[in-house]
Image (cartoon, rainbow over all chains, first blue to last red; front, side, top):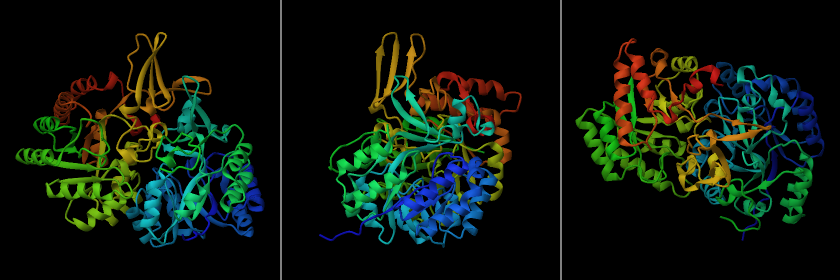
Length: 306
Length: 325
């Protein structure tokens, strides 16, 4: 049996609207304390939010790089306005850092340049991964809904690409032109008053029977549960996954990163790792159903794989 | 503008042709198409007969192969394209890049349309698909306003098709895993959304509760008509407010804006509803055909007749109008 190289940790972009100083300080602490190798920064959900983080991007990139992290800049997930197209064009053309493509326009504009592909691009098979690689994609974060059986096939079918798995965080499930978050407070997108900033971890959507189900994050809908692929790490490593993505929640992400780091290195048993995640993110319900080709909200204990 | 009409069965296909469709779109009876519902869709022989019937009447046939190829099972999708081409489809409607690459390489003369499921929502995205796969037409996601569409039309090098009537996705199409999160079955992988196999109704006191998987999607007091529990059109609690968090149970109707769509540069108008019966298809297609031909004075009467056919008789113009956001 060949020993696979251990995957490294990456930190995905903050999906929620955090105010500028909170966003900056989060990354400063990540730079100083978190054992992550790659950090993707930037607003992906809503172009109206960009001005909150823009003043701090330079200092955050510098601090992360000084700490030895590789930094990429994420593009917007939904691009419909001319202004948004111009933002993506400028990013693809001028960025001194690698760009993570999160919509088809970025994919098109980045052709011929090394870039990465984010989890909101539909890569469901090896043929698609190979096509993107031939155009310059060096790493691909696979869609969170993919079961392990597909992950294994894709990695086998597209050698030379570094594949990444969405292993921690509320799962981005949908994006809309309409802002359900603004709507929930009697507003509309064009006059939203940035009320999504009131909910830095998302605004919970419950069923009428008071069962927590989803969470609103501006125009994006995320899962109520926090995906946690941690007992699955050995299996993912054995399949040839290069990177494990942690998606920031409003919790102790340094502790989350340390927990994953210890679990990858075999320094902590799965049960301990799960207990540590629950301490780092109190009150979160964990899920891993997508990995097992079941409903994404499910939590499957143990090691059996689909 | 062409009128593009749905057919989930050979009978509905003939009705759509007879009612004056310029093109009818349909799919094979498996996971390769995004309306993979029990009892719907076409065998190879049925498609062959349907295409022959359409040809006799000067109608085109578009074959939707618009889910994403499951890794390791790509053959199912490849064969769907092979057979659609062999049987004479006037266009294949695709969403998966891997499948677009296969089609463009194997069948360079085959007309390729970009499915709404591909989520090509801006000029750079569309031009990427035109340049890479020689796509001839894009079906736009239902997230753009009419001015957005007009601006897009000036910047792209292919035709535009838009949905004007029928079911309405609230989320950007092809980028939604809500159904998969609740049921394990997704539009992208399985061609289903909020599948009937996971739907249950139960009575609770005087209320009828509709459920999808383990989740309550709606509760209907006595006297209120119970709708199908499509996840994004359910009633939920958000911060103690009870209501339709994403969208009311409405369907799309932008027939009032047909002239604006034409001026915007739209080539084809699409009717959603491959899951609908042949009577519905016949009625919607023939009324819409007449509405498109009618002058401004006669059109409103035809449009109100169409509205009676909509789910629950409530409609929206959705994202085509900015205030919907």
